Amino acid sequence: MNAPDVQARLRAARGGRLTRGFATTILAVRMMLFDKAKFIGTVLGVVFAVVLANQQLGILFGLLQKNTMLVDNAGADLWIVPPNTTSAAPGQRMSTQLLYQAQQTPGIARASALVMAGTSIAKPGGGSEAITLIGVDLETMLGGPWNIVAGDRANLRHVDTLFFEDAQRDKFGGINLWSVREVGGYRVRVGGFTWGLQPFGPPYTFASLDTARTLVGMPTDQLNFVLVTLAPGADRAAVIAALRTAIPTADVISREDFHSLIVRNLLKDQLGVSFGTSTSFGLIIGFIIVALSMFSSVIDNLREFGTLKAIGLTNLDLTRMLMVQSVLYAAIGSLIGLGLVGFMAAGISSANLAVIVPHWLVLLTPCVMTGLCMLASLLALRRVRKLEPGMVFR
Amino acid sequence: MSATNTAGAIDPSATLAVRARGVRKVFGSGALAYEALRGVDFDVAQGEFMMLVGPSGSGKTTLLSILGCVLTATAGEVSLFGERIDTRKERDLPLIRRALVGFVFQGHNLIASLSAVDNVRLVLEARGTPRRQSRAEAEELLARVGLADKRWNRPGELSGGQRQRVAIARAVAGAPPLVLADEPTAALDAHAGLEATELLLEVCRERGSTVVVVTHDNRIYHLADRIVHIEDGHIIDAPQETP
Ligand SMILES: Nc1ncnc2c1ncn2[C@@H]1O[C@H](COP(=O)(O)OP(=O)(O)OP(=O)(O)O)[C@@H](O)[C@H]1O
Ligand SMILES: [Mg+2]
View 1 (cartoon, rainbow over the protein chains, first blue to last red):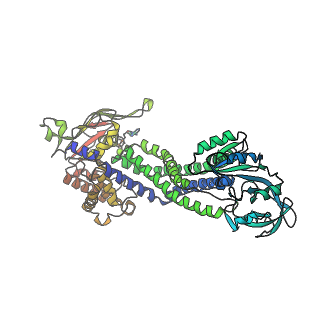
View 2: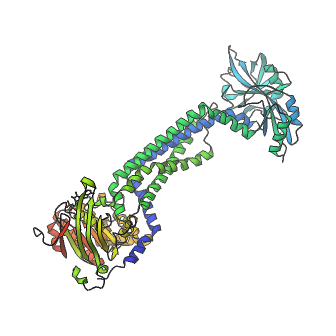
View 3: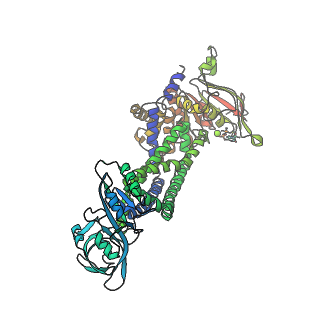
């Protein structure tokens, strides 16, 4: 009898890592698909987490967007705001003196005033509805109406003409283009409509600076904000510094910083906590479902895992198998979940609430789910790693 | 063929398929400790088809597990084909199993989600056979055990005897020099049990594999080159009752 070349066999078994990796990957997929009920259950766990987390975040981003949309769409690079401002809302008034000081600062293309005040529109049948009136410099149109669905911006040149929110037409007593209403005791006409411009407070309504001041009884030497655009090639930081020196009585803030300031302030209290809770809830439930079904799948197949160990698969091989399964669960669940989220976002979204799922969130979701599934598989993994290959003889 | 054939070799341990000296295995510790193997000396010559018999609880499975590197001995020396395995680290054992040992279990222990071919292929690829060869080799092996037409069936679609034949094909896939079987006929009727053991004997002979079969089944004793008796964790020369 020829002695087997033990060393050669050991060498062959030690090599072939790629073959073994490939074989165990396929095996992982086959085992995962074999128990269809468990497979579907696990995928649904991921789908649940994806849908709940994305829906909650989508609504949160929608709510945040309501509060930042003026800053995002005003067209200003810099905002000059009253001290301690944390939102783009009616508040402390400032002198038009600031506007002239800003206009003289080098590096600035344009600077214009923005007036913002709460008032109300009277309804024909009695009663009234609150609105947020925004007075815009018609030369620059900074802070001016956007998302216009009817009417021409030029209509605002008529002293009595306003742009209203389309979604509020019924609420305002069935207004149409050129309907006549009363705002702040003055007779006004509807010159156009915007869509979806509804912040947390009353809906935005636009007028020229002069009209707005008249309607809310603001002296012509007052304003709420100064909106600034930078000259091409101007150094933003230098301009901000120059403005701060020139106007020590107000804050100067870039559009991006103002945006994050608003977001931070909203997240700091209720919004952050409540949406953080519901998003984590979705992730935790998903985590538990995935962890339990992967664990029970390992328990169901304990003998098979023992056999795999007995035929010489290493803990690393088996770990890789569970990781392959985790990644697949995450990928399939994310795909289905994001599809559902897209569907739901379209269904829920209205002028009143946009469900916003940004691209980065779509890309982040499968990554987070992969992490979540891998973490969830650790329980199953622990069981598999502790498994004695000798159990196959029991 | 017997262990004495190799007595004249310069290094006897190099030519024995299995060489075990003073093997002890204690399960548990303290008051619950139980010594399942109490100093076992055990040799198997290369190419031998040997049967290990003994009463229930005598330590057969324990000994087979140690030889198959799925269990480590508490004390003693164990070599497979001259390669000491008792001194190996636990994490080297899977490698030794892949390289040297094929198993046939009492239950067939096939992977339920894989076809017969893929069950055999898995072991071939674990032993390092490249994917492009493994399929043809697996199909050939299944044809050899008489399952050419059932090769794409999953274990759930095979009879008990057919499953055990797939298990035999899997055990000898990649021609491991040592094949270990623990009561391979226990789940089969007398006829199927005899057939399966004959098949195991033939395919192992063809490949030159050494075989240790643990069995209670005296209807297959006549197939053995040699029968070793174990009782209470000791190998005994003269059994209480001859088979
Ligand atoms: N993991 C374990 N923990 C504790 N005791 C064990 C363990 N495995 C085996 N034993 C004990 O070791 C002794 C030998 O067991 P073993 O399984 O080797 O017997 P066996 O000869 O294979 O018996 P059978 O013919 O019934 O399969 C038994 O008394 C058993 O209870
Ligand atoms: Mg046993």
